[in-house]
Structure formats: C-alpha cells, structure tokens
Image 1 (cartoon, rainbow, N blue to C red):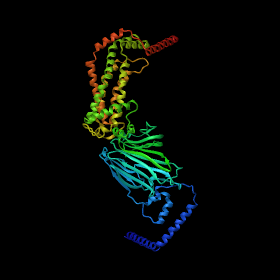
Image 2 (cartoon, rainbow, N blue to C red):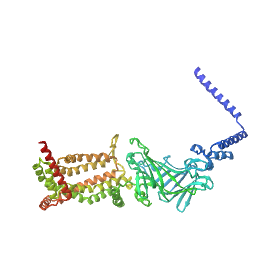
Image 3 (cartoon, one colour):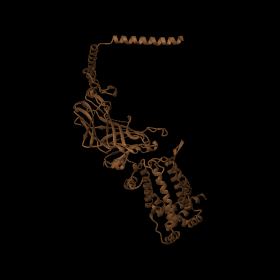
Image 4 (cartoon, helix red, strand yellow):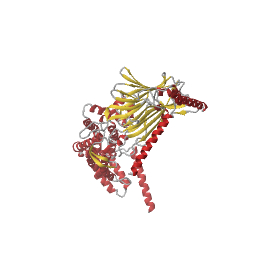
Length: 633
C-alpha cells in the first residue's frame, strides 16, 4: 500500500510542477510588440549575413525549405523571399492539393506539389483480382524538372506548389498546372485530354522567365516510375516488362529484360515503360530528346513473395532553352499495350511490343495479328485459337509431306544401306562414300527431311512470341480457363516446385502428352533408319532422349506461360498426328516410291560442287589413314 501511495504522490507532484512551469512561461511570454521587434531584428541580421556571403555561391533548395501555403504578412513574405528567392511567390498562393479529372478512359489526379500526375486509373480494365488498373498510384511515379535561377539557386519542381485550373476546349479537357513566380511569370504543365483517347497532349513551357533562369546551367527532365503488379504470376509478368525506346528516327532498342541495366542514347523519339499488357510512354513531339540517360532495375528479388512492383525505370534528359525560355511539346500515353491502339498514333509505338526480331516479327505483324484479329471478331477467343492453329497446320502440311516422303525413302533403302555397312565394316570412310552415293542416286538424302523441318521454325517462334503479347487474350475465358493470357490452374499446390511453380496447369499436360505421341510416331521410325557413322554422334540415341525430354520441357516450362500458347501447341500436335496418319496411310504409296527410286538410280547422277568436295576430302582422309597404318607396320 505504501508503494502505491508513493506512486500516486509522485504523479500528483509532477502534475503540480508542470502546471507551475506552464504558468511561469505564460507570464514571461513576450508581448506582440516585442515579438514584432524581434522579427525585424532577425530579418536585419539575415540581410546582413546574406550581403557578407559569396555572391557566386549556389543554393540548392529542398522540400524541407517549403512550408505549407498560408496567408503571410509582409515580414514573413520578406523572410520567404530571402529563403527561396524568385520562386517564393508560389508558396504564398492558396489551392487544393489534388485536382481530379475524368474522361471516358481515365480517372486522373493531379498533385499540387510538383504539378504532375499523382494517380492514373484506367477505367475499362481490372487486374487478376478484379482491382482497377492503376499505372500511377501511391508515389510510384515522379516527373519533375531541375533548373537554376539567376540568384544561383537550384530548384526542383517536385518541391514547389503549382496552381491548378481546369477548362474546356471544345470536347477536350485542358488541365493547366502553373508554378508561378508572379501572376505573369510561370512554368506551366499543360495537359489536354481528348474523349476516349489514351494519349495526353502534354507541353512544358515558361513565360516571362528569361531573366530568371540561369541559362548557363542545364535544365533537366527526370521521369521515374515503378511498374505496379497486375498479373497473377509476377515472374511471368516481369518477363514481359521492359524499357523500350526508339532513336535515330526508326531504330528500336531495349534495356535488359531480367537484370539491371543502363544506357545513354542520343536522338530519342519515345520511351516506353512497358508493364506487360499496359504501358506508360513519353513521346517527344516537336523534336527528339538530344540525350537520354536510362536505367532499369529489377525489383522482383523473390518471386515466391507477393511483390508489389516489377521494375524501376528512370530517364533523365536535358531540355533546351529558346530565347531564355523553355517550350517542349510532348505526348503522354497511359493505356493498354495493344498494337491496334498504338498504331493509330502513327509514331511506331507498336514497335514497343516484343513481336520478335527480324522475320519473326514480320510474320506476326503481317500474318498472325491480322488473322487472329479477323477470327476473334467472329468467334470466341478459344475457338479462334483453334481455327488459326488448323489454318497454320494446313499451310505447313506440305512440309510434313516432304518429311514423311524422306522417311519413306530411307525406309526403302535401309536393306541396301545395311548391306553397304556390312560390306565395308572395316573401312568406315568407304562405307560413308558408298552410302552418300546411293542416297544421292535415289534422291533420298537425310537433309531432304531436315530442311523442310527448318522452314517451320520461323512460324513456331513467331507464334511463341505472339500469344504472350496478344492483348485481346487478356482475361478471355475458354472451357476451364479464366484468362487465356495467363496460366490455367486446375490445382493449387501447398508448396513451390523450382522451375514448375505452386500450381498444376492442365493445357501444358495435354500438350506434353500430344507431343510425346507425335514424336514417338515420327522420331521412333527415324531412329530405326538412322545409321551410326564413324566420328559422328549417335543420332538414334539423341532422338530417343528427345522423345522424353521435349514433353518434360513442355510440361515444366509452360506451366507458368499463357494458356492460349499451351492450347495452340496441344491442338497443333493433335493435328500433326492426324496429318501424319493421313499422309502415311492414304497419300504415300511405298511401292510407287520404290519404283521411282529404282528409276532414279538408273539415271546418271551428276555430282555438284559440294558433293565433289566432300568426296575428295573423304578420299584424302582415307589415304592418310592407310599411310598411318603402313607406318605403324
């Protein structure tokens, strides 16, 4: 009880002492006249110290130098002027912190401090969890200008309050954000928003500041942005999240896809901060950026963790003064990475989409994108994929015919080839010469089966690039699949399997089964016909491994890929099996093929230059071998 009393007494004593101190401070507080006199004295001291400082010493202001906007008296205005210089006027003006504007496609929030977009919401789209798509939100983006003034101060627009105004220009909405040095002197960010348009006409200009800017120092535009996660698999989304840019009028390049990277490029036309299916693009309107320093940093350190961001992009570019003022026309695109939309702006923005390089990209842009767009306009998206797959396989059916015809010829020649190998079993080089001579006469070279297969590679790779970037597939369902642009999960695992994931996708399993049976039917026959040659790898053994390796690769690698791509491979292999059975059983007649081979064997076959060269090399190798054997004896 005694300890409790002491505690209570101590508390009461502390309260009394605190009350007495407060009363004493109140009694001793200065009067209003004394406060005013003290402010004047302090101001005079500041002026004196300022005069004594070096005139050429630059002052860098930071956000801590700017207090909240409030009504100031004359003394406070003078103090603010001395502290901030020419730009102090902006901090004396009232205004709302956020200005919200909506169009058919956007909900935009402009932030007073810095004058740029604090939030960009795309009204027509949601993410995998039905949350609205935001490209800018919660300070993931910064857009500011660094400049110097004639009083040797360095400023950054992100630290200063802008004055907002919203007006109409016909059907367009104009948002003006002005950083005012006075009522007639300002830096203006002007945004013009058009109905149902993802491109914002944006300009940066100054007025009446030719004597305020220190034009001997550079003025720099900085744009930073973190890519917000929108997809179910952040690792898959991150694979297609990349900084792309166009320079030298029509050349397109990219920073690294999966690692940190930086680049300095001249004459840049536009910059694209691509977040897989959505992009933020800065377009240089009137003239290219003379030089841009770009960086890309991968923020997905552990894909098993529910990460919020994919990559951090930064770009720094100098702006030019003209007559002591700045004026730069730009464009800001916030919207879907959709080739049909990007192409309407006639600035080659669709080149920011990874369709594939060279001929692969050409095949996608010239054939598959228009074809799929036409089919999906009439059919459900899953059915459109199946129909396109059928058309592609029919187009390539002649290639399969050439392959099976080559296999049929090799099968017919197998007894003669076995006889040659038995006859020259002690002379491998001679056996190879006779084998090549027989195949040449019969028109049954193994290369005749390989070359048609190589023709399919551009088509297969083009489709491999097409499906993961096809915006039309995003959130389109088919059978048990909720989203053809993402993986189809029929079971969620309580753990994560390296390279496979934490779920089971069905379409990759079906595609793996189909490719196994297709390879078993084709490669199995080739293994039986393929001889093992001296000094060459055992192709039969390699093909045997491929029968099992390819389906496993399909099963594991495509478990996290777009289900639309797995659907394509599943249907493609089913059709290949059907085409192979039809060709084998109803088109290729082995008796007719044999008769044709016999006719060709009777004709004199002229050796081409390559064949003669190969024959000479083999003969020289045989002579050298025989000479070595004689020296040993």
